[in-house]
Length: 132
Image 1 (cartoon, rainbow, N blue to C red):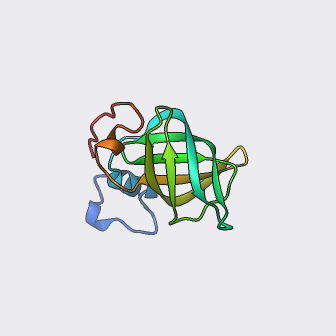
Image 2 (spheres, one colour):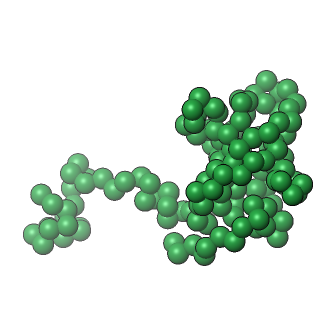
């Protein structure tokens, strides 16, 4: 049975035959468009062993609210770190998710703690308006 066929209405969909992709739900919740750009950043905070660190990192999947950071350090989801861009601007960011490692390097989703003018200009790029 094709869930989009004329013989069955959307009310008659059987959950065992059709499951919507979970990424559509995630996309509906996205607050801003991700840009496939890479940016060098400095990152400081405490790692999973409560050791302070300050080191270079790489950010990808940039958006108005944060991005993904790649660094050779294990972090704690829920902790706060400081991101520093190439212009010397610093901003607090919360580690919101541990993502799949990229080439063996730990990767974390981060979002800016404050959503203000400094956050919206942190990456130094203009983001397209979100159509969701």
